[in-house]
Length: 109
Image: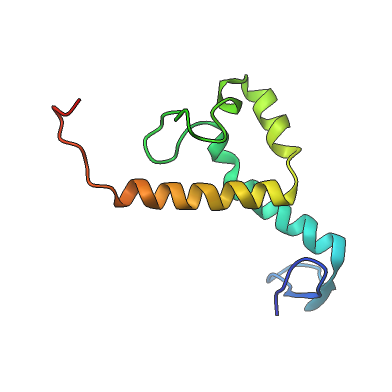
């Protein structure tokens, strides 16, 4: 069973680990685990657009990508879980929109 937030989360131990076969994590630990997963899944976005490697002006990360990398990472790691969920949702929609759009001809300007 896995629900995150204020609810209870059950996780099973990895093979060979010293952890009990089933352990109970709750509240803050579950939220921190979810935030860690979001950070790991989104960290590549501070570099550039995952679709075409550019830095679109309409992207919420446009100004962040102009910062030096240490400042980008510090800014990114300070985001709240809600901010990370917003960025994940925004980029999921954006990537799917870009991939669904018909390609422009090479000589198109």
